[in-house]
Each structure stands twice: as C-alpha cells, then as structure tokens.
Image 1 (tube, rainbow, N blue to C red):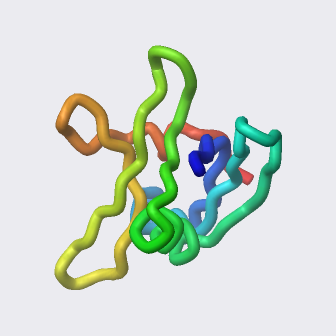
Image 2 (tube, rainbow, N blue to C red):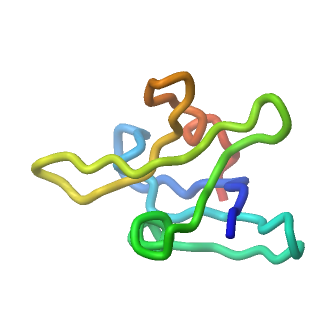
Length: 93
C-alpha cells in the first residue's frame, strides 16, 4: 500500500523533521484517508513495507526513514539520491 502525505503537525522548535509528530495522508487507491503519528508511520514503512510519498506526477517524492544514532527515527523525503525538505513545505494541521 502507498499513501500520499498531505499535511504535517510540527510541535517544538526549530520546525524541523525531528519535530514532526503526525502526518495526514490519503490512500489514492481507495480514497481512504487518515492521520498517523510519527512512530506509526515509521512502522508502516519499516515493518509493514508500506510506501509514502509527497506530491504527485512528476513532482512525486518518496518518503524514507532516517535513523539518527542518538534520537528516535523520523521521516524525510528522498529524491535524486539526497534527503530533501518536501515534508516541511506541506500545510500544517
């Protein structure tokens, strides 16, 4: 299953990827939608082998899991073999 992340909730400062606490998403295959916490989305990608992305068409960017040594894993977009900031550009909810 793949979902398109449409919104993020950021708590804390600075507003960076590590402070995103939840994600609003749409499953375009069945028009389902929902909200998931950061740990739930990390599990969705890592354990359940789900896929997440931002944008659509030619501007679609995959989401991956970053695992820093001294902090909890978090999500970030990955394009052209580089980590990018597309999630931080999404609307807040």
